[in-house]
Image (cartoon, rainbow, N blue to C red):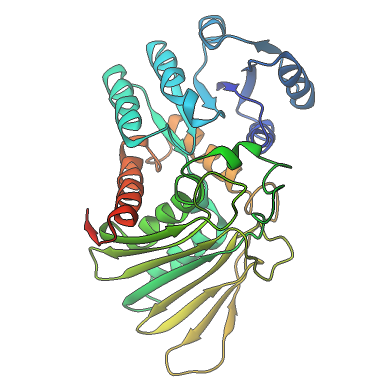
Length: 338
């Protein structure tokens, strides 16, 4: 499969490394507006061709799949360009600048008959995959609620985020649009579709433009509730605080499941006081338990005819509708029905 990429920013290293490990994928070209970034990345991952113009690359390389690894402001036009060439697309998140742009991108690809997948990798993290299996086999019984405490601890002071992703400081919508969207998707993956939302957001670090703390309460069709409790200034106990980005607790009629900051899962039966660790296999590689590789492998497998697709952009619009409702709920100070 002939794959091309566009973008060489901080997070792209994880995508390039994942592509380089797939024997049935040829990473044939990359596009980047900066020549130095293109040269450095091409050398690091043995990419044979570099371009500064996306349309030129698409016309010359006859790609099967384009991986867009650029900020949201670029997404719609890049998707439009790729759709005209009938190239399947993975697009980085945050997906587009707004729900309206995302809806336009989805419509463009549907009209062109092109697959558009959002690079939403948290649901591919091994602890969330194992949690989903435990929920599906009834280990927890009837699920009452799930809560996730986001605590990366990287948001304090005037230098916050500058060492990795400095554009974070300038995002007017930050905690939810950039970070909580991951957990909104995880909650949908684990609990199903949401029906109501209530949110309270605030900014703690005056050095940034957007919100960096807040609560989001979601109600789901099955009666369960999800609580996102996010604070980018506070941290949690973990060898690597960016591994899980926080801690999760899921309460059910039969048991409670706990995720810690090191990717370990613990199960405590209802009425009991002793937890047991849930054994499962995963590799601490790349980002988030190798979830970038798992997502990209999933897309390639689908394009090769092996199974249905997750994270298709048309489905991902549900996350963006929730995101929009979160901001509206916060500004209006009330619960909203989705």
